[in-house]
Structure formats: C-alpha cells, structure tokens
Image 1 (cartoon, rainbow, N blue to C red):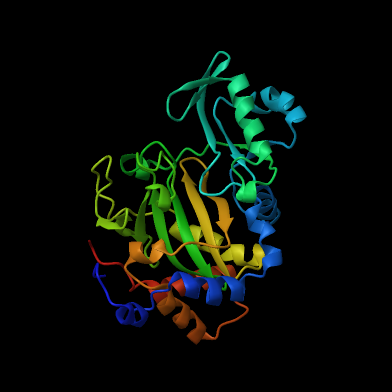
Image 2: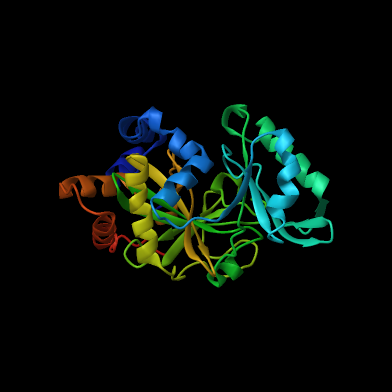
Length: 321
C-alpha cells in the first residue's frame, strides 16, 4: 500500500474508515445490550469456559476493599501472576508479577513491590481508576502467560498477542501486536506497540506498522518481524470464529496469546476493534466483508467458517515493506 493515497483510491481498495466502521459494522452488527459480555472481562472468561475454550486460569477475584485481605491466600499458589481490572481498556491497570523474594514481588519492569503495594494497586482497580467510564470495578488475579519462544526476539517485556477481526463469525483479518519500549511492554498500537500483518491462509507474518510507519524489524531488538510462522494457526482461527457464537456480536476483535506450555489462550474480546489492522496488512476490511457477503453461506460451523476464510484470503498476503 502506498503511504500517501487519495480518498477515492482508499475506497476502491475497500479501506474502512472510522465513520463507516461505527455505522456499518458496530451499530449494525453489535446490539448494545451485548456489550457487557465483552466489556466485562470476568464475564467473557466465564462464557469462554462454559464453551470449553482455553483461557488463562483465574486464581481469584477481589470485589471489595474488605476482600483485599484474601490476596495472600489467592497468590500463595504461584510465584507469578497478573492482576487486571475486569472493565479495563487499553492495557491500563494491569500489574504483572514475574516472581517473588520472601515477602516482596518482582514486577515485569524488575522493580520490587511488597504485599501492601500490591494491595494498594488492587484498591485502585476497585475504585475504577482504570475502568471504562471510571465505574467501580473488580480485580481479577490470573495465570501469567509465558509467551511462545517464537516471539522472544521481537518483543519488549510484555506478552505479544494476535488480534483477529471476526465478521459474522468469519475471521477476516489478523495481526500480531508486539510490545515495545515505547508501549511500556503493552500490546496496544496506540501506545506504541508494533502491529504485524498475518497471511490468513498460512499464519505467516508480513510487514509491520509502528507509529504509522511501515517497518520490517522490531524497533527495540532489531530482529526481523516478517516470515514468523504462528504455531497452531488453524486452532487459533477456529477459536476466533467460535467467539461469534458465545457473544452474538457480528463485528468482533478476538485477542489470543500463545503460551509456551498451554498453546493458544483466548485473552479478551473487543466489540469496537480498531482499524490499524488494515495498515498492518496493506489491505482493506471492506474487500473482505464484501467477499464474505458474496458467499451467502449461513449455518456453517466455526471450523468450516475458519477454513473457508483461510481459503478466501490465502492470496491476500501483505506485501513486504
């Protein structure tokens, strides 16, 4: 995709803009009463577990400041864990503990924090400091993902994830989101992470985008980001397709992490996925939406929808930067 391009050319390529996304995809396909299914991460996890999907194990939930006294018992079973707000957004409010030394805990940054400090963080989460709309929240304590060795050279501190956009149950476009120093180890593009396009047919990475620039190496490590083969790609796409059934949302972002021991784990869902995935892939979502509509295929299983999407978009690999 050329860097400077006219609005007419963007439309011809099927690039979806923010207004079109809001009107034709979100408003049209995502009834508002279904939003709580994905805006509440605890509820999303329960839905996924009921459907038999793999997710990071939940160690415990803290709902009130009085319940913070249970924190030592909840984290006693593991030296590493993650605390996140149930209604958080953009990776805000997530505390990652990578180890402990006596009564202190090591954060992903390497800094130490004592139990009182962890409890203070939980209290902030409960107050709604990190939640959507500032509403009072719950703190989830769960398994810390040990990301696949595939990403060791193309990630800075945090855990990379794979964002797949699902349209009416069909996974139509995906990107790997790589944490950087700029993003403070988070996998959110607007905070400075790298988005890398993925060939839907093969699960192999292509070009990347970082701060609206096309890149082919990770900005911190200098390691190439193209040509990485995502393991378990078929399973990952089936998992993304199944999220249509468990939520009823027609336009959905599905975030999956690859754990070195447990394989693909569904991390969270998004009813308002952004559009940077188009830039990372050098392709417009509109083209793929039109192709899915032309199939006139309804009532297919998630496995069949995922396989059909792979067949449809295997030739849509993004060009090298």
